[in-house]
Length: 119
Length: 115
Image (cartoon, rainbow over all chains, first blue to last red; front, side, top):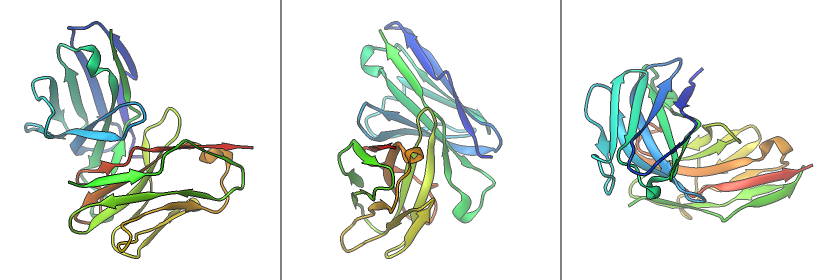
């Protein structure tokens, strides 16, 4: 149980285009999902917290108009990188928290990540 | 703000060797500490955690003790296996005993175990 999927796993796009990445909780409902970015040989950096039915909360320095997050259902959050540029190339990872888990079982479950390359 | 520092990798060991991956942190208050593991091609998985000083987290032969006096949470395993080859992340979150809050990660340490 507690599986999170991401789609696509890899995407290559041209500069100036937009790319959508999906994060799904497959066997549980997630009121909260998190989006992280990871550069090579660097740690995961939290970009935003995605709450079902409300606006996402972005971390300082993350452009909300650049990285659009939608969490329209309890099992799906999407991250859209708008007008992508080469510097947006990175590994994007999502995680989800089980809405029904209580106490110590309320863990974050991570997706396998999406490798974005902007040419 | 909160931060986590892990030892530089990659770490290469022979099977059955002893493993230590150092992790130190800075945080306000009383954070909860975690080790996550990422196997090739998979997402991060929680390996173990500790929620208060002197707590020892353990799982699959791995252990880490929450040392408040040295602000450390070093990961150890007495005898590694080839299947332990992965990337290991130390992380913390402030407040509470769960990882429901925001996680601050270390940079990750690549472990390779040879037969």
